[in-house]
Length: 397
Ligand SMILES: Nc1ncnc2c1ncn2[C@@H]1O[C@H](COP(=O)(O)OP(=O)(O)O)[C@@H](O)[C@H]1O
Ligand SMILES: [Mg+2]
Image (cartoon, rainbow, N blue to C red; front, side, top):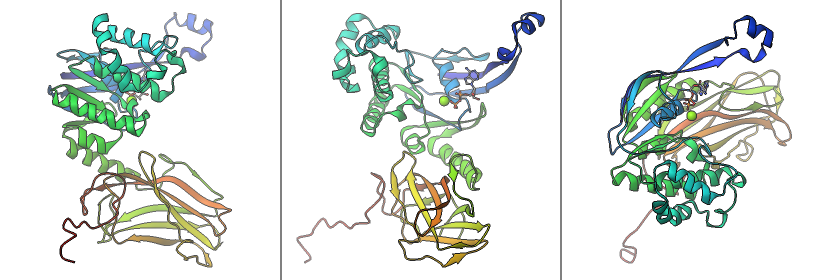
């Protein structure tokens, strides 16, 4: 698939607040602002490869996918696609809410070009992959978002597309379903199909994709090898986020003091946002108070980006509660050997009183960092147990 100098413009109309009279006086023409969601985007998706699109919210990823799917027409440039395209875009797009799951499978399948007979042959497989046997005759308006996605994805992959386009919706499914999707991606890939995915799950993008394009405000920022582009993207996003900002997370508290900045440093005391399993690392919580705070407790919660709560250490459990703090200071949490496995993690910080009754400053997702493969070189799950294998345990005793 070739995307050749594609630009896409949206018009933002401002007529809503005008009276009919004003709009007639303007000659019936609506006032609008133009906004370029894609700016001269060119890229090559090689047949048989898996291509990832990454970028901040609003960078134009979904718009580009919709242009590839021919749901939107570019205002400039062109997109050439060879073969049958199947797309899973927004949640429930293409489904008719009043119809049953069964009828929607037939409706969607026929839109994607399958005959009734072909669909009869594929039907059971589609329903089984979606895990919706019991609900297939229920109107889809009663489905949960996870059920919508499962059915949509199952139709999209089972109609035998040459090119499969998938927007972030898959993140809605449960873990088991996501694993099956990833297996299915691998199958399609080895069958020589072309796949384009949009995802925030950077580790999956790195593992699944051959090539990645990074979109930034409608412009291509970088195209290339998946892990190189993901690395550069992560670097930049983190350098922007290393300040405590109100974006990204939520923040509340009584406000007598605050953890103003979170830093992660490596064993050389160099600030970083990328570490490896097995590294010695230190989190630094820079705090400041407006007034003396008696018996403060500092805590950190660690979540993997998919929401798994990994751990939540605090200074009270470690029996380290100072009588008071006043003004600026620094609290450090040092880990001699990091046992987190590769992935992206968010740090939530909190400052509260020793009884845990008063939250002084609680800041979710104050800092994000990535763990890359190190020692031990494990990848499955969230943490390594740091264990030791012995494959010849009978001998040597
Ligand atoms: N139908 C639309 N009308 C006007 N603006 C839109 C429309 N769809 C998307 N946009 C805007 O275009 C930009 C790109 O959106 P989108 O392609 O959805 O980005 P992404 O998928 O990367 O989050 C955003 O600023 C968004 O607000
Ligand atoms: Mg989007």
